[in-house]
Image (tube, rainbow, N blue to C red; front, top):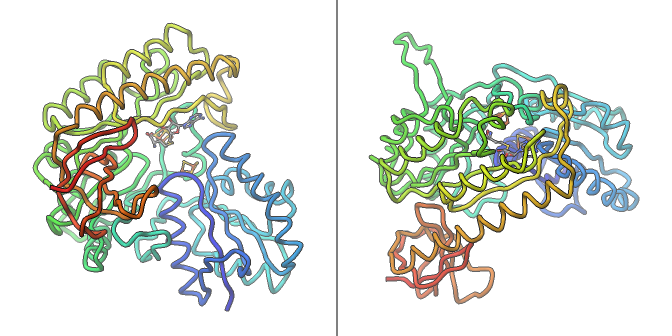
Length: 443
Ligand code: SAH
Ligand code: SF4
Ligand code: F3S
């Protein structure tokens, strides 16, 4: 029996995958170590979305050399998107890596771990699959607070946005059997969990044709409905929605269940129609704003968050201004904001030029960040005086006398604890705020 230490980078889907990996390895007789010094194997689940994500992993591998000097037995394996992108080449470039395993090959990990140790060889397993969903694996909740958990409902992506590596690192899109999703959510609820987040690169294209004779196709709104029906005390969230197919049907299902959280992450990427076309996003700004209007129509209290890229290939100053304009129009509650990073093998790498100078990308990004900071603060100020139902998650980082939780809109609220406990639903009246946090008191 050996101990495995798992370190995870990247998006929520990677964190969910690490929990599948932990489960597969425990079944094979390994234990999951919480102390890296005790580990026989270190698994690093990696992200390849931007160059700096990969640089961070390479830096981490250099840091781990000292540990390997001390513990000569320890083997390092790279999982996830960087493993898939670079395959065995990664073991040539990084000599201290013993094995690389891509996102669809985690079932072969127990065998690979045994081989690299017993035969002292290196191993790479990076075949992508069109069917693997790990539907039968019950994840081992690794970094969970026992209150909220992720559930992967689909894998892969084939939207081929011009800038994005995900279709190459995660393979074809495939949806998981809805019954296994509902069962997993119910089992979490029975264990005391109060919130599940359904995950996919584009949940709006979730679709599963049941093969049990009566030909029913479950789409994402239907899946949300089924998960929400488990209990009114189980909150349901999801990420991510691609704007091109955000349907009214989904908005209706959201509006009709109090326990489906009123928060939509709708990555805009750019406010310019020419950029959106070049990015291969399949919508324009008018379509996007129409979807925003639909969200507000069905759910006036819904929060909206986004992703944006500054300085994509050939973006002009005017087009950058259009991004600022759409931010002013939508008034996002939160945004993940990035500088464009050219990724090998993408459409952009093959056909476009990364021609916006680094300093200019930085300036554009900083302008977006400054504007968004101002909007988030103004949005939060509008919440002062309102009372929200909050799911308590834990102690505030600042003070033991305070707890924090989230409202349905996914905003963090900090408040004096009184006798509230993590896992409880309570009502909190907002009294103050910053751009990032609401402050309030229990009512
Ligand atoms: N599937 C999600 C996004 C997953 S990647 C969606 O389509 O909405 C998360 C975010 O990273 C993207 O929304 C995009 O804003 C950003 N991103 C992806 N590739 C990038 C690149 N090459 N450079 C900079 N940002 C990138
Ligand atoms: Fe990448 Fe586009 Fe797929 Fe999102 S939808 S993962 S941005 S290719
Ligand atoms: Fe990164 Fe892969 Fe997620 S590239 S963002 S870990 S799908």
